[in-house]
Length: 181
Picture 1 (tube, rainbow, N blue to C red):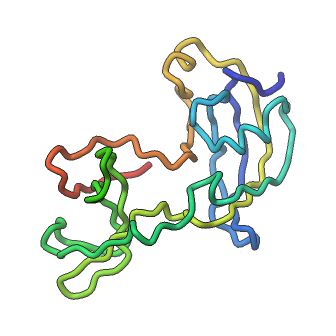
Picture 2: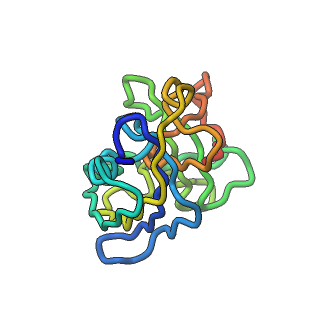
């Protein structure tokens, strides 16, 4: 069966940067609904379109086609007392930047804690990095009507590689802890 819109694709993958430094060795394969449902990067879908089980390839995805360029304006310093305690480097919070007119929230990662200040970075951890995906198609099957209606795979270990956060926004605009999967 060929990979096409409304097929469920199981892909073993390895993610490296452009210099082949390993970022993620996919312990479990990525399982996604193919066909523009934003369940994986569009460049991965392009590379796999029309392929079959057994196909292998290495593709490079530039920052603009992955998680964007690094934006220094998304790095901010906050008073430590605005965030829940205890606070540690690596913790993540959802917040809305002050100059964000559409009200969309983004995930901020604590990158530094200095005395009474906390440095938060709203960039995706892979922003500004060209990514190299080693892909091996393990399985292709027709999606169920329910999977198509919901726009994602059911009952399998699907992994989201599009950088979106599906969490709820805190209505008062404060930071809240998020748990990413």
